[in-house]
Image 1 (spheres, one colour):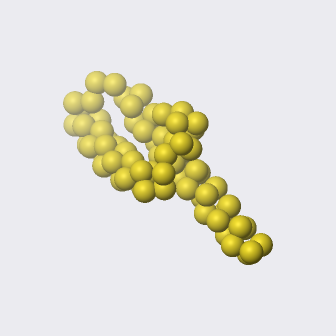
Image 2 (cartoon, rainbow, N blue to C red; image 1 turned 90 degrees about the horizontal axis):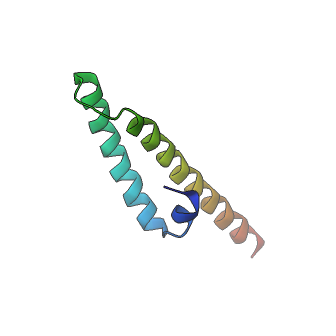
Image 3 (cartoon, one colour; image 1 turned 60 degrees about the vertical axis):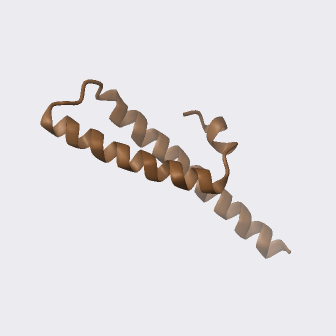
Length: 71
């Protein structure tokens, strides 16, 4: 997913998406260990998507704390 697409999502959507990606990554890692995973690039893509989500969540948390301290 693109960062622009993720930034358009709500906080709750990002939380749900991160849980879904985490579950998917676990399943893909297990398939990779057993030799059943055909496209190993999905592991890398999933990790990067998860990192993007975490980054956007932390950016929003910082923005909220800055906005709260200024008020």
